[in-house]
Image 1: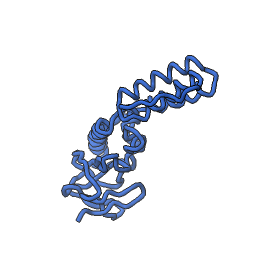
Image 2: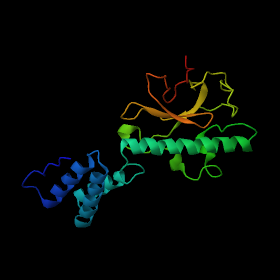
Image 3: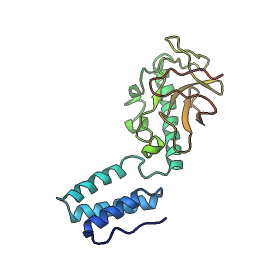
Length: 204
């Protein structure tokens, strides 16, 4: 990792701020931790100034869920989220005569304890911070391949997809949750995954 020195002649606080920004932009967990420490130091040194306020904003961004995760770690954390969502969906269906919820938020409380489970962790460039896309209207029975409104649904491995990440990650893939509870990584060349507001399409 190469870290450039701050331009000479700047105030020490400004130099510290820019050093933290450089650390923050590195794709390295330890560098981001160092950036968080520098921002915290700057907030203590200049609590009322412009740089102190900027440091506070940058530190808040760094501390959001998943902000310090690498791309690989974020994908795995997202996979675990979708596994939990899959289990919660089937638990919900067991309590509602086989019917799945109209939205993932209906799982909160009895079937999911944290709303953060419904958000893709990681950095913005990896799709982090976006809620998962959900296909409502499916029956919990795996053999059903149409929504209650008659729309086609996407299939992966012959099984309907019920939820997926809103965008591909930096590696060009995304996690999808199938109706049987299995989470798979797919890429655009493997199957067309619908974006937010699009109607999912059946895999040929």
